[in-house]
Length: 138
Image 1: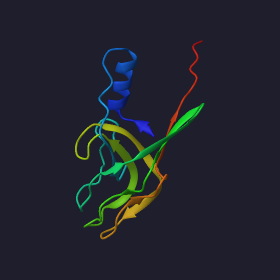
Image 2: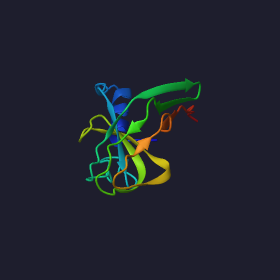
Image 3: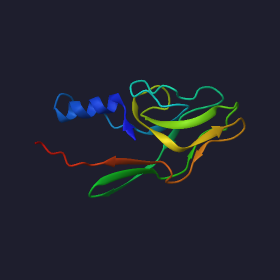
């Protein structure tokens, strides 16, 4: 998973005590993309064919070196009314339309989303790792 420019700047501003961290969103929404999203715009999001972002229910697990977020329930997108093509990447947003682009990543397997089917991410199959690293200064 990579953070969007919006999230990176929000974190940097908060750490530098320049600005408060953005308000907690009421939900987060998963977007599907046909190619790598731009970290600023979230480009290449699917459009048309009945596509809508889907809300995500997260569970968080942690150990001393990493924090992992996973979907705590299946993520179910509406039935496509047209073939939407290859789904290669995902994005995380704070709103179901427009909103702030928070993070993005690549699916392990390219999926073809065809007319008359739903796109489903099974329970615990979307796992976002946030790795903690020891930073040393020479």
